[in-house]
Every structure is written in C-alpha cells, then in structure tokens.
Image (cartoon, rainbow, N blue to C red):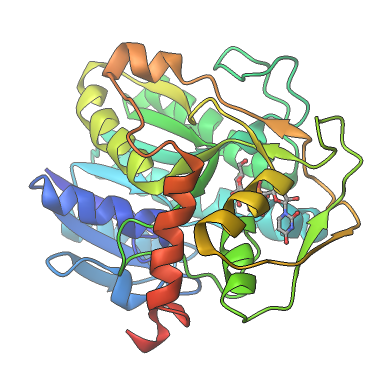
Amino acid sequence: MRVLVTGGAGYIGSTVARRLVDVGHEVIVLDNLSQGHRAAVPEPATFVEADLRARDRVARLLADHRPAAIMHFASHTLVGESMEAPLRYLDDNVRCGLNLMRAAVETGVERFILSSTANLFGLPERIPIDEDVTVDPGSPYGESKFILERMLHWLDERHGLRFAALRYFNAAGAAGPDQGEDHDPETHLIPLVLEVALGQRDQIVIFGDDYDTPDGTCVRDYVHVLDLAQAHILALDALGEGSRVYNLGNGDGYSVREVIETARRVTGHPIPAEVGDPRPGDPATLIAASDKIHRELGWTPQHGALEDIIGSAWEWHRRHPHGYAAA
Ligand code: UFG
C-alpha cells in the first residue's frame, strides 16, 4: 500500500515509517523538519519537505502522490507548552489536520490513522482508562487531538473515510541503537533523566510531589515506540473492516520517582533529583486499559518492561549524545 506519513522525520513517525517499509509498504514522508530530522527518515522512503499549514500545497501533494492511506503524526505535542500557548495548539494542530483531511477526502484516500493521546483524559473517572471513559481533555493539546478525532468521525459518516484514532500513553524507548528520541528543546522525562546520567545536565527536576499518588509524583504508562509502531501496522490492515479508536499502553503505571530510580539502576549513574513546582496541565495518573486492541487485533506489547524501555533509550543516548545532529 502507498502510505503518506506526516511527521515521518519525528520520533514516533520515523519509527512507524521504518516499520511500514520493513513490512513492504511504499512510504512517502511529509515533514517540515521543525522537530524532525532528515536523517531519521528510512532510506527507501520518498521525502517531501512541506508544511501542513499550506492548504493548497497539501492538496497538490495528495493529488500528485495519491496515497491509499495516511498516518498523521505531525503535530505540536507538549502538554505543558499548550497550557502556555493554547492558540498555537488549537490553531496549528486543528488547521493542519483539517487541511490533510480535506485533501484526503478530495483525492479519495480511504484510510486515515491519527496519532491521538492519553491527554484526552484530564481527570479520568477510573483507572486504568478504557475507551469508554469520558473524554475531558487535560490541556489545549489534548483538546486539539479530540477535535481531530471528532472531525474524522464525521468524515467517516459522510464521506466513508475510515479512521483509527490511536491514543498513545507515554511513548518512550528507542527503536534501535541508531534510532531514538531527539527533541529540541527536550522536555520529556526519560530523555532528560538520561541526559543527567550522561553529564549533560546537573539534575532532574521532579514536577511536584504532592499529587494523589503513592509517592506523590505523577504516574504514567510508558509504552515502547516499537510497540506503538506494531499497533499502526495492525490498525492499517483492520481499517478494511471499519473505523476504530484504541487506547495504547502497557497497563502499568510508574511514578516520576520510579522512573528516576530505574534509570539509576540501568545506567549505574547517581542522577541527582530535586523537587520543583508542578507543571500546569499534568494529570496525576494516566494508565491505559488496552484490552480492546488486544482483543480485536491481537496487539500485545513486546517491550513493556520499564527496564527495557529505559535500557533501549540509554543505548541510543550513549551512542548519539547529540542526537541526529552528528549522524
Ligand atoms: N516530568 C518531571 N520533570 C521533567 C519532565 C517531566 O517531573 O523534567 C514529569 C511530568 O510532570 C510528567 C511525567 O514526568 O508527570 C512525564 O512527563 P513527559 O513530559 O515525559 O510526558 P507527558 O506525560 O507530559 O506527555 C507525553 C507526551 C504527550 C502525550 C502524553 C500522554 O509528550 O504528547 O505523554 O500521557 F499526550
């Protein structure tokens, strides 16, 4: 199948693009390189540098390439940043998705996979979080993804655009020793902790220790990026039978302190930590119930152990302390 991957030079997008290539799909990566890296795009994929905010360009690109499916990763993705700059998230994320969906409908694309998020659940009424938990986004970022999910719902209803909304919990780990997470600036817990282990930072600041959790720090469900990639492959095939929404996580929650402690064991470095202020928009606990995708598509995470997730990320960071810049 010819698959257009937006954000395919980014952390999750490039991992999925590589997996698509490996299983025999033809991949076209579209990325504006604002966060992504040209070096992260898998070799046989066609690369197009383009910005999804340019509606006419997006329409032309789809008309030229005529993909059978779209996977839409390109997005602003930071919960905390979206609390500071809500309009940037509500404008760019929604507009880019809309431009892409419009072009998809106009050119007859039949399958659309959206990167959605656990931040759809700001104050979940139960944990673990299954797909029937009430959506109540925790930030403008989560809201922007929910708007895209709802747009897809209507485009399926009225135009037959089949979609899968894959709500990632905390994507983490590296796909291989030469393919990993590289954001500028970095804001995610695991890479920051590993930068402390590498001596690139003095310490990690824990964003609040007064949450209603066992040790007072936020609890998250860290899911390996390779397991997320596998979910995309399964969802792409399953779209032949209709649209679907899945929550993707391991079903295990780890606190910020537990992540730091595990990283100390994995790396053998002391990793100094200090408690700072909470970060606006951070829910206390997010843990997925992924029974639905397991039941329907047989998705079973293969890299669920936190040691493995952090271990793979550590390998990447050690080998590439400056990310893709020196690749
Ligand atoms: N944290 C710290 N110190 C730091 C960085 C993070 O204590 O320096 C804490 C955060 O407060 C949070 C946890 O570590 O409790 C994880 O934070 P990340 O920034 O790594 O990830 P988020 O949970 O904020 O967000 C990530 C993705 C989102 C996605 C979300 C789903 O960035 O796109 O997971 O849960 F929506």
